[in-house]
Image (cartoon, rainbow over all chains, first blue to last red; front, side):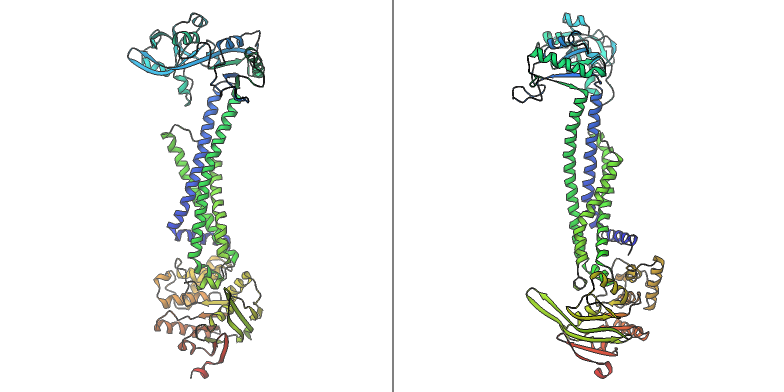
Length: 409
Length: 231
């Protein structure tokens, strides 16, 4: 019996026992669909985060309080400490100490409700300096951004994100209008241009920028001296590492820290990217692990059904042996049958996974990225699962003595 | 020429600690073209003998030569090949595959020995013609009467042109009309020089043969031309 005949016989067996085959495939189908979707989610999330971090710009240093590398238990977790100050930012801006740093923007923010007439809108109120605009690679759509004199005079002015502006003022021109924050009237002097169309950009389009001094002294909410983040822009991508060294040395000196135990963290786009990727990778591995377990369960289902099938078809096996089927051919026939079940389950599972990838992003705001290689791989794995879990039942069928098989009623 | 040569063939089964002797030394020769009936009460070892004659099982000791070839020491795979080439089986239960039409059932043994698809189909249909079922080629076993099913089984046994046609209680599940039909067919096959061995406990079936071998307790108790025994 050649392979084509074996294949045809296998197909026939699958077709003859439709319900049983369908149930067997279901296990594989769910496993494969789960694998494709979870891997797709992981990929989608990764590329989303990559876009987000790339939009920060390639020559940016992000300095946050606290240290992730703390070993003595002295420093709090990343971002929770209040060790960075506006003075640190001022020092970093000095051309004499840090010649490779072009611009420095300390940022301190608080959540607050903005009121304009009858309109209310809760958003992020961000206190910063004029360099923020270049450091974050943003532009102003109309009006102007904050100036050095705004900062010096503790001016009651604000620059709104485009989303914030439209929420508060609708279609009317926000320039020159007044918004109230905690009872403090602020004049709208500008509106930012949109950060882009990606999902992450919507957050950046909804904020109210005020001078750092105004936030600290007039609005409150945040500490008067400490800042949340300092953005420092290197003069060019090539001087990024020099800028990193200068910032590090300067802050260690200012804070009196040892190099082994700093109370701040400096990250670059690259380091953020690798952190995010590794976190995401871990998550993807975890999800894929769960999906793999469901695939394993599907495989055990195949084995289960194949064993039932072998038991149920003992007479057929005996007859085929009596008519001249060698143990090898019997084994091959059941292996082909199990692989076919796996393959069919895999193809259907890939279809369900693809359908899910098209439908789900409409329901949840997560991107799902599915590569053809992942699909081909998943289908191959499904077939392999069928094959591997078919080995034991096929072996049992092959070893069966023809007289015992024929004797069974 | 001798087709079957059994020399002191013994077969013992083990069921737990119990040793059961099914064949206690059988020496038997069957020539080409003979029509032999093997009779005996249940437990006499006639089924075991049939399994060994059909190469479905191997003797514990002794020698079995089929068409000059010693098959007593062959592996499972080699035995499968011998069965396919030399033996045609007809079972009491018909043993047809319900999911396949008649011609596919008949084609089955051919599928284990190669040959083109069209040729296999042609031979299967010719075999069905020969047993008088040329008009039932596409019927499934469930759509055929018992006698017709057994004829499909005979066609399946014949399609490979085997040296030996081995029938195990071929009429055990049939009514008298179908029985007569099947027995006539066996007569006819024997008439065309085929070696036929029928295992049966029915005297009516045995009467058709030329030679009757009677078994008792795993031994041959009587071996004589049929006419002398039954008439």
